Length: 435
Ligand code: GAP
Image (cartoon, rainbow, N blue to C red; front, top):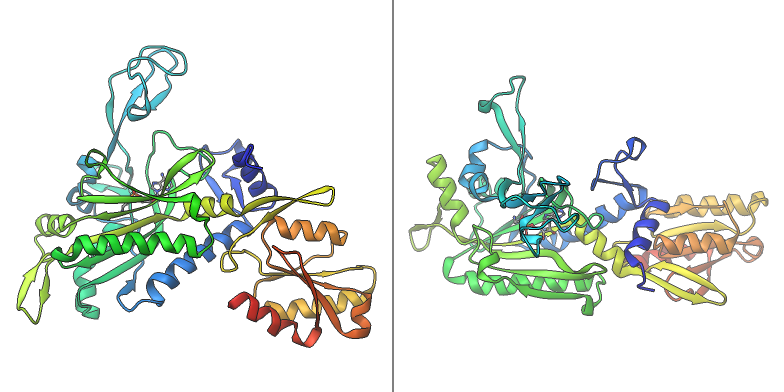
């Protein structure tokens, strides 16, 4: 089943409308992807689950949505102008470009054997111009992380909401990096979405909070259905820490292309707040009313990728099962993530009374849960189609339904079927889906 798993995921994603190559009609823009009807639902469900767990179900985290474009001084203060680069090496013969850190031999091109240039720094931030004049004074950057929008609003949040330490800010939004070697489908792209928490703590409590967040974030993936054996924690060695971090642990997923980072949980110390205070001349300290003390809190940052998580959940949910002489492909996505909760299927589409009842049931269910209607194939085909996109339940209306006012409800993973009366089906499904 795991043979060519990545190819199978990419193919299913396109065929069933999860993820398409961007600008495909023009030959595609490399490593850029568009989310189709099922993809956007899966992505929205994932973001909603993250927001619910981190903002709604806690008392100590507030939501935010900062602009993508920020004052260019933000990126000077944060260290991204000076430190956010990779070394790149170019082949003098075939002109291909490599990330120097990925090369086994940094003298010889791995493609053609040609001579490589010395590793040269390449800043990963996308630059553009604000306003009609394209000169240095008008340069702005597309943010490479959402985090800075939360740091620079630290005092606004203190003034508006008066939170007490420890407290956090949470944000989901696009980030951009001009990666030298994007790839592995949506795993590494130049435009992507992050889900970030900046958790402000007393410096002496930072280590304890870091450990707590590593556990909390690990458990979040497991509770949403990722198999335990496919998830691990990997502490960073000192040499791989970002310029702002004193410690970091990655949560890694066992992708078909190997263990790779899903999320990083870092101790950013007081680096960012101090830097912004220095660069802006404004006060970025916290005032402790009881102790009458001003100080810079430390920041614990769980920072995850939306697109990487979507990919991990797709890979983890993909199953092939032998059913009689057939192979059933089923996405066993968690009920909160499944793009469609219910499909209503009339067994015979040439019987108006069956179609009418099926459409009526569908209309009713739609008010409470994402429900689709499909009558464009035989029942076997319709079930397979729904299995492939992870629909939780199929409701079938048949000839018998006209007499006993009951429908067949089929559960995705077990394929078990139950007869449920038409007037109870909505409550029955609501209970199963929202439990
Ligand atoms: N604010 C901290 C920060 O940005 P990071 O480890 O560079 O830390 C956090 O990024 C997360 O963002 C990663 O764990 C990953 O999920 C996601 N991410 C980073 N670069 C990405 C890329 N090029 N494509 C897709 N996701 C990316």
